[in-house]
Image (tube, rainbow, N blue to C red; front, side, top):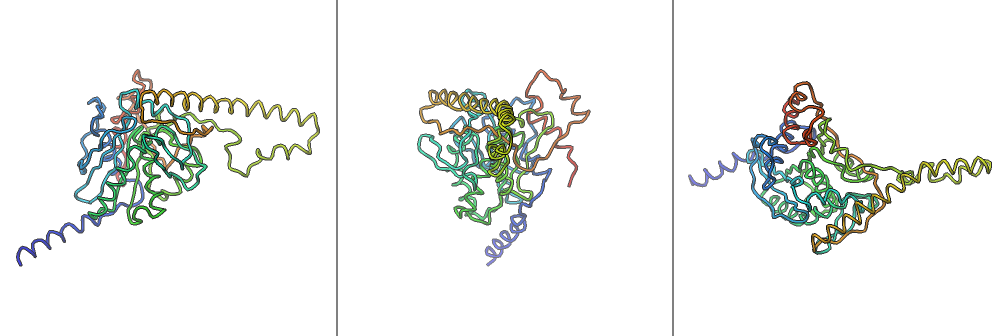
Amino acid sequence: MKKLLTSVALIMATLPALAQHLTPGFSKTEYVECLAMSSHLDSLSVDEKYLCPEPKSFHKVYVAPVTGFHNRWELWQNDATGVMAIMMRATVSTFISWGANFNAGMVRAVGTAHVGVDKAYDLCADSSACVHAGWVAGLMTMADDIFAKVDSAYKTGRRDFLIAGHSQGGALAYLVTAMLRRAQTKGEIPADIRFKTYTSAAPKPGDYLFALHYENMTQPGWSYSVVNAEDWVPETPLSVQRTTDFRTTNPFARIDEALNSVGLINRMKIKALYGKLYNPAQKEVENWTKYLGKMLGGMLEKEMTWFRQPEYVECVNYARAGTFYILMPDAEYYAKHPRQSDDVFDHHQYNAYYDLAVKIPEQ
């Protein structure tokens, strides 16, 4: 009887901790912990001068195998709160890893990735939305493992998951979030799981339509993109918007109809002017798809026998996604990280973000 009472007491003692759920809204503590975990992911080989201090509350419980474009993810755990963290690794110093970044042609947000075997994916409620081809392919080499670990954790009572990553890891965190939330919407994973995302120093994951749907599925306050105002990486990939990239109902789609009432000479002049504005953007989109889609993809196919190029979409309408939380540098920051630096990644590094994040006022 004494042993039974002791066991019950121990179980009861853990219940308050495990009942501390994730809540919407930006948390300095959560972000700093995610940033710390990001800089200490396995085999990342970060120069010590760029590292953040070790995370205070989370410890590593699973390190996934390296897959895809030298991708890797990890599962961390906070024993005090029961919160798990799905951490996506950033770019590593290999051609394959950088190749995933530069394979920036776009593919549909619902489709199939050819990664040794065909893997169907669903990242958006609107199948006409577009996302970055290289990162989708990398994600799909990790997707089954992520789903399996979420399911295992759920069966042990875990309901709260942070999703985070820095740089390429942040881009992948966007897509992991979209994948899991879409699966949740379709009843493929339990509805009572709470996912909260912090993308850090992340580039743009997809087009404007994808960004709209991503923000809709994570509002209010369930996904934050943290950006150092001096960091150039979140400005990438480059964005090219054509008149054909607007939503279906727009004046450009009816330009011929609108010009019917204009005299022939003026109609010809306006159409010529319109062509001068539209054609360069169209050519840029075609070149982007040709070089950063098919040509770069062909190089990756030669390096990796398991990889097959997707069907690219002629779209470069990349847009930033999520609720942005801006880290604005001050004089103390610039004394350590000069605005003009010989290190082009100085303002992108973990320590640069950490130096600003620790100054965020406590909530």
